[in-house]
Image (cartoon, rainbow, N blue to C red; front, top):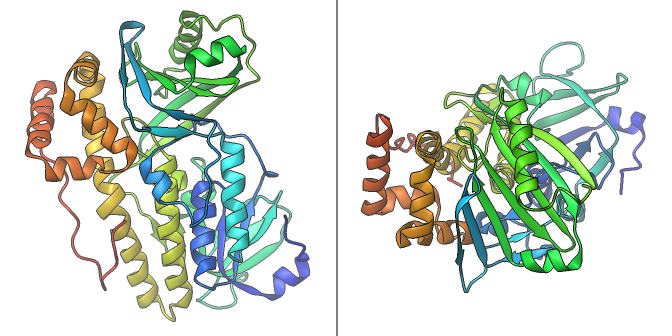
Length: 423
């Protein structure tokens, strides 16, 4: 439900935390700040629920980052994965335990927002943020940030969280830098019951024809989510890949209910995560796993951390304390998600050069399949596997050598300014 506060009321008050963007990252940030008892305003330019280009896979880390009592609106539960290499060498691997679940993003995102509202956050939809200001006539004191909306309305906050997607205006204010941009294309294809039954409980992952590309089929009841992703700049080839992929699957005769595209962006290692009293998280910060481009768990985890540290920044009384808390937020991100991203970048570089090696490992090498299962279930992570398992360290080093990569896994960052926790 949209907040009924008038513009005049908003102009007279200073929010503890304003969150821009009501996707998984923004809703998680709003929930975390509201649970801490702060006055939180969540802004969203669309009306909810709204569609988002996304496969909708909920892996273990996503599940473990949800608010207490959150009931996942699963459309299917995955126990099998079919792997193929550009349509060839197809093999299905199965698991007795559920690997991950599949959701529709409109339902999932809306439910996250409702949990934030129940925790005390206020929601305003249909509003577009033009910019944020931390100095100037719109800012009454150094402890506030001005959030300027389209039409000229200005909101004031002691801290702002930018979670406004991969084309983030808040990210531009912070100065987010990117070193990987990919194009994802997707179709939601309604299918007859007989086709849906064939896919129930099973997903397909196809390693694609362009370097670093892959396709997927995720079943969701009477609809199949079919998509492909590849590097930006390969738009025509990516579109052909999706068309060929759908035809190869025998789905070309079914009319998609939705066809969409989306750019995913990964941050550079030295990209900032804050500026003054403004933090960024999720896609706005360029936080996602570079190889698989999995972003929901990164959004949920970074959003929770951003909400927790936004509360600390809102309480900061001077620039020194604000900077200290912002650095602690950056440490928390880099110590957890940053390590996973570092490993993911190495895997992507190797995968771009030797996709057949990855296919052979996942379909024929039991430890690789076991690692895949453990990561999707959430019992471990890419970072934990590389740091804690000598065999995995040797395998990754061997991949580095095969494709001419240098260096080892990124070391853990230095200790935070005053004991900030990792993710």
